[in-house]
Length: 153
Figure (cartoon, rainbow, N blue to C red):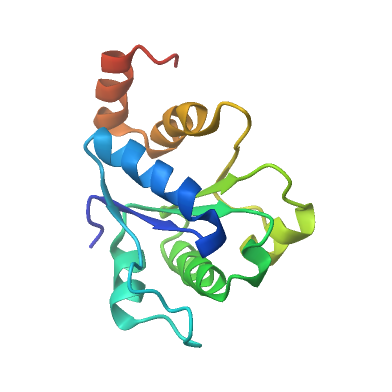
């Protein structure tokens, strides 16, 4: 059963971006989960992390230039892709793509098939990305937050 939280995956090199995203979404009242204990030195995801990804309302991955070498992010994303496949694509996946990311890195993280929503982080950073994330999530929470903050449709 899906729970009302989002799972955010990012490499240690994208920690600042991931933290900015987490704090911005939490400020709006959304619950965020991350693998704070990390699976950096393991070849497998922790069972708790797998369950959190499976149960999440949506999976958000921050893709930076070094993400192709971030094994925990690759494993988390691979698991999210499997969940999405088994969920008949109802599982929402959002990719935040940082500046300077080569197309080959995106393919390495997400595979050959385009999945979910890709949001390119430009000079507006999280201020531009968060409204787009909320739009992808949809529902009443997006409309309420959008109206409260006067974001465009």
